[in-house]
Image (cartoon, rainbow, N blue to C red):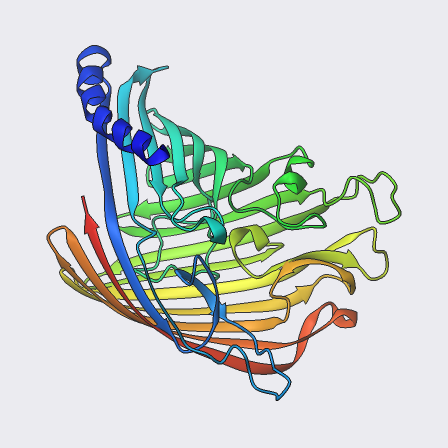
Length: 401
């Protein structure tokens, strides 16, 4: 029934567009792409949606004979990143140009919801001469659209998150000041009650982000800082009301240089409690006082070099490091991702051929994760490490419309 409604609406929307243009000067345009992905991994991997979005190779898990259960290859084909976009241009409001945007795909919100139709972006934007205000759901401000890898998405090396937000951009020539207040929806923090937006909502204060970006002649340089406060519990482990919070700061720098025929991009993130950005880390209770919290600290850096147009070559280098926490940890109260990983190395060359509206991509991705044992009495730092690697061969076809 739901699919019938969607098809019916899709049939009516072009008619509505024509009517709206004649009566309200509203212009609707529809874009998107059909995407096919096939990929082979030499071992089991941590990923989202049946391997479609790879994070890193899984750690060893030994059976009773000492054999590694995760030392098993995997192959899959998916089309769940097929996407639909609606662009809306309407009459001026408050002296500003107005623009609306809606984007959806079949990625689903959970593993059990794969192929489910979900909202990615939905926002309204008001554009004055030098000021822009956006209200809605869009990429986290530390996901820099002007500085993205050529093809490999670089998760968990990149701040991968979409959030409801209010974003104000002030332009002074090539200089942009960007302030954002945001909450959490699909990409959330974790805590005593599992993954939830409750911890940020109960803090009342939204996540706050400030950036300075210089952009000119296809060259970009910028830096930003992000601040958030979580309230993990309303009652403590002694069943008493508590208002204890955990605050965290994330720093972001980025660069794009266009030196014909090469394009070089780089992004570095250093921060605390970056779980909600699909990165490793989080927070935990202190060993000295389980009623207080301490942040895990994470560093990630990646660079991407590309060249060519119709036939394009690119290679991505990335590195991620877990620095442990600020204090010794109470191991029974840890709210973090992959705290047994010390570091991650990624190398991913790709070849992209474009023909009219169609793009063919072949990529090889090498990931080497160093796992070990967290020493909670040494701020959760990982010791007695061992390297685990995976090689992914991927092929994608993307048809734009």
